[in-house]
Image (cartoon, rainbow, N blue to C red; front, side):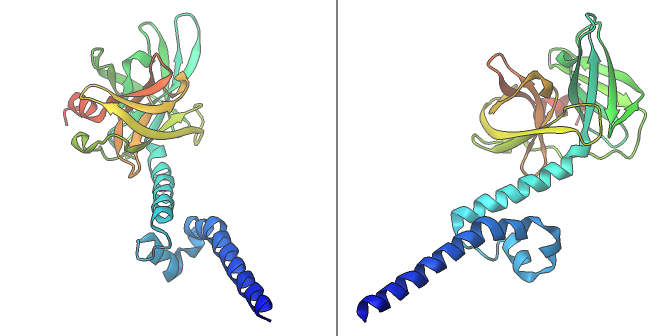
Length: 242
């Protein structure tokens, strides 16, 4: 009799554990990422941090939700740059829409001297003029013939920390919504350069790097080790006169 009772108790505990695991791994992430369920108080409370099932798991889920939200928010502030060199080689890079009235910042090494390039915003080729360039800072400022463009906030350089989670968004073609995304952490930084642990190909050259709240951290390029380094936000702000 005792053995039977113990077996029943163990069975109940096992089913409860499996049920909780299934809910946390499959059901809860679906509820939190599906906009339909945002009307329910439980989901609202969990997103606001009022409900904590497991502290470590809650932080992980909340960060991933923040990352997805930030990616969705900032993609429209990225311009595609189509470059053709003197040797007739073509490739795609990216730039940042810095102001709503059409100022775009790109990396100078993205467009070598003598090359031709076109700029695309949301899949549309736009007319532009080069406003100024600073090859020591590796930056070029461009004015496009567009207005009411989407922009992003600038991160506070003094608040950047080692190990901070960051992500980049690069145009993989000139088509609208054709993006490449990668994420990692800040590995080291100084006032001139930010280095990350992100490994990428040269297609990401000029792609904006953001923190998980969607603020600009800098413009990316692939260094000699194949890792992503960044012209930091403080250099870009100074170049823009901000």
